[in-house]
Image (cartoon, rainbow, N blue to C red; front, side, top):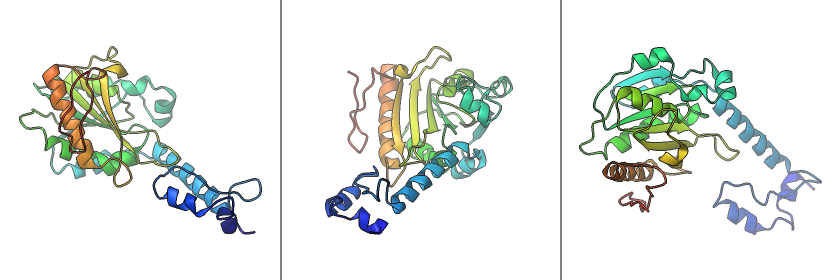
Length: 256
């Protein structure tokens, strides 16, 4: 019996093929002897390679800057000097290099967007600029700081950036940890009045899996994010006290 035949044998009815069209999870893969059919084993190895590439591929800030159509940008680095240090010392990825902090512009801004490479530069290259554009377009009357492009950065680096620049809110768009089904997923983390070293994950709101067409669409994600920002500003908080109850249009949310 060939691998293809094994994959569609009596133990693997056509129902599995129909179900696979609705999920990226690896279900009903069949078997060849005691292992996976070759086609599925190769798919798994390919996904693993894509995840590793996403983690280790260098961040190219100019790619994001080019997608922002003339929007002012500032480039910074975390205290992690290279990728290996970044992976081994998460704490350093949460702090700005002192020299970069000193050169950040300051102002009376309502929000600063921080584009951070995180664990998937690919996700940032493909989705971050569109998310900044879509979200900014929904923020009527907001004072928006220059976009900060951060290398070797984790989510909490945004706290340091917002504090240094004088921004009331920070939105960190970061490459999420790749999985075996997606290596290009972008996350958006919203924090009101962050304090470096004090603010915790409970003080943030998160939108995950932004990656059209398979994940959250830009329009939907931006609508939800802008709605959270408007409500968060009115209430003076983000995190567990601010719940997203938007429909796909991202119109309404209220605290619980």
